[in-house]
Length: 330
Image 1 (spheres, rainbow, N blue to C red):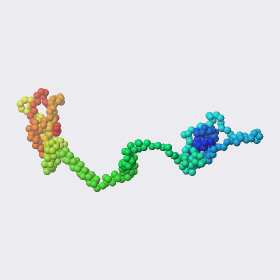
Image 2: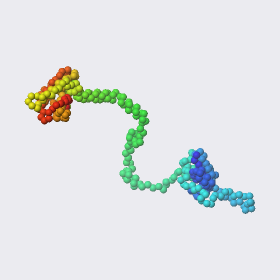
Image 3: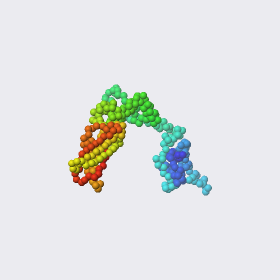
Image 4: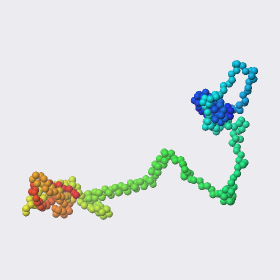
């Protein structure tokens, strides 16, 4: 509910608050004519009711002196002190455009209509004809080019379609035959690349297990700059026996290592890690021996076969009393 009251002197409508009227006991001062009046008498609901009819107040009649008696009571007069009166500002004023259609404008007299009030005569208005002629190029008949209207899609602040429509359109795009064919082709290409990388990584095992793939793998290695060797699977090799015995001719020892291939593929010869110790178990010397140092050509160890490696060592210094042998691929 929005309360309002009408000035009894000038007819202006102001918004009021019920708590303000309680403080001033209903007395307010008009913000236009500065008249003090009781707002409760003209109080109405601005949202539902029309403003009360207003007429210029007549001059108060003066009672004859002979008729004044002791029982006569004068009407309540407004307070003399401004502290007891609530001042209505022009911001509280309610204009006619906020009324209901059937409500009457508060600023017009009863004989004036809204249309007459809004009709303004500009008979004395003057225009700068020289400026207009200059804007038209001194040729009134010159036709101005038509204004280019922007495309509807380029208008600023164009509304976007709802989210569910955009999702449906996106899903329909991914389900189109052309997009599906492109995705299938891309998946095949990626699968081929993955298989090629896997084949090049395990190229030695593939060439040994399927000899028919060797030409393709060799061609790939020529492009990538790699080599195609025998497979290296240290878990399929074992040291069957080893010995380190003094050799004739002084401080020399003969090392013998017997290797066995327990796998199903021919394997490359591994390197041998030899560690020599003295009588106290302290390390005297340690060395990694390659197949070339054993004087063996790069021949594979066939599946289920054994290979013997022998090497003559010169050990000067402390006497060697123990050793350990381990095989590895560098």
